[in-house]
Image 1: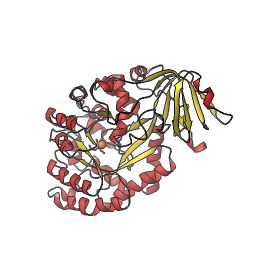
Image 2: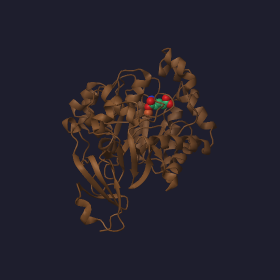
Image 3: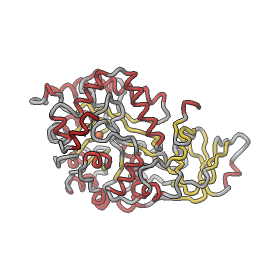
Image 4: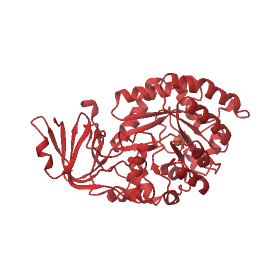
Length: 424
Ligand code: NIG
Ligand code: FE
């Protein structure tokens, strides 16, 4: 057996064993940890895990040995909900927001998502690409090795396709893996404000088939919210999406308790996201149907809203994942470590629960559980070396970047908190 790389002298290695479904209840509070560990890697995959010097009998002259200096190693972090590709920024709405104007009111006035739609339409592919690349580099520098990326700032075919194509191009040239989601139903264009139906017909009859035909998105998502898409409209769009072969996600019960959680259970969506206003009944239904609650505490923090009831979700047996929701309006930050810290400080999750929520459960939220999300033989060698003695420390010492190094498929891509993949 030829081994390409051994990372030795790992103080604490968070491994994990995928059990065939996301972690729920008390499982979420458990991590498998090996002390004084090593990982052996071949062709970008993990081929052996053990402790101390036991790797000695599997290496040969070609094996590179790297020293983790006694630090903490976890699976690469997964950001399973972002709006990565978009034009412009919205600091012009910041003072309005600070003075208490609600997020949805800014949207109703033609700002918010609609103002980003305008900037995204005006931006060239090159501009969108270089802005998103900068964000993706930042995410990688924070230890994120896989990112879900949504469209939704076009609201018409050409711009939706432009956004998704930029995402696909980025994926080709960037070490971070992307998972693509079509979110044409992200806002109602002003001209359809009084009558949504013709716009929904364009989404379903023109955009969704074209995006599918071009192979640009694996998931379909809808912003189901008071003043945006109703429950009935969301159900119609997502049912059609399923018929076309998309997997499903919903922006559900973010601001108003509309029944988005219930709908995500009825449709057996892969994940239901936000859920700050979800009903207990809806959460119970999600638990029964194994729908992941993808919670976005950075958005609660930034909108100054109540946090989702993560404790209740975990108690009810709903599998929980956490992600950034990185976007120019409700969460303009790429920092998933801060989101993890909010997972503890805002959502009252334990550090172990949070780590499971951004690794194995996040992998389930994007249907990548067979490749990533835990350090197991056969999975991709996506690893983060944290300059931290243990998992608790990551959440406790907040507001800084704890990354020491990042390996993507066994290749060193971040060193000294700097993305270095261009030089490889
Ligand atoms: O997930 N809520 C809807 N969509 C995004 C925000 C997008 C924006 O404000 O540009 C979200 O929060
Ligand atoms: Fe979102």
